[in-house]
Amino acid sequence: MYLGVDLGGTAIKVGLCDAEGNLLSTYEGPTGTEHGSDVVLENIAQYARKIVSDSAYTWEQVAGIGAGIAGFMDIPEGFIKLSPNLGWRNVPVKRILEEKLGKPVKIDNDANVAALGEAWAGAGKNIPNLVCYTLGTGVGGGIIVNGRIYQGFNGMAGELGHIPLVPDLEAVVCGCGKKGCLETVSSATGIVRMAKEAVERGEHTSLALIEQLAAKDVFDAAKTGDETAGRIINRAALYIARSMAIVSVIVNPQRFVVGGGVSKAGDILFDAIRSYYRECAQETSQEGVDIVPAILGNDAGVVGAAGLNLRS
Ligand SMILES: [Zn+2]
Image (tube, rainbow, N blue to C red; front, side, top):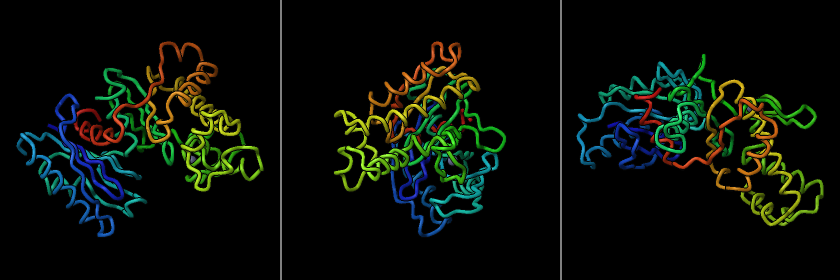
């Protein structure tokens, strides 16, 4: 049995998986971020013991524990250097959890872990080489090579949201401080930004009538034929497809898996991504390659975290 921990800013989700990646049960409790890292790590330990004691299995049957955490980290050391959403700096997660739980602990960033979840038991099952995008507030990514997460030299491999591809004249500054990153156009935040700009320019669009614009409003408007909304969605899709064309000649994955809140838009987004990808990716690099939606949803994090002890 393998235990996965999805450590978020407000909730900790733990999941119990078997050795094939089947998710048997989950348990969720508050993170307790405001009480500091000692309390948060103690909460993880308690939820981990609880999910096992509530199951048909014993603690002895747990072979390892993995945790997915947003932030910058030393992955082999299991050490969080900086996690803005937890307010953590220099927290030795692996060491503390191993002391508390007496099991091997591995950590990785949340996007890598979600990619591993999809590769192990989701939309990428039995596909050894795949690349996963998570389109949400930002754009996350994970690269799976030969069934394992590819982390790179210092853990930055798969940070697909920061591929700089928007031409200078159209580029805006990204949260990372650089200009023209993929996530400035293809995240929910980027889509909303482009929509607000179009409204401010006085474009004739139904989006002007919506007060608290969300990415979903832009997709909904595009589906009803709103030209401005359609153009924004196409632009978001175009840059994802271009990034995939780049990734295809570096990693040559067999499949792209796209998840996250924005991916719920469905066909309107996927059809556009696929068509731009066919148009711009080098031909041999796209032969036999498909682009599919993620299927594990919010469970990808716990499943992938559980898989860290087997496949990272
Ligand atoms: Zn960036």
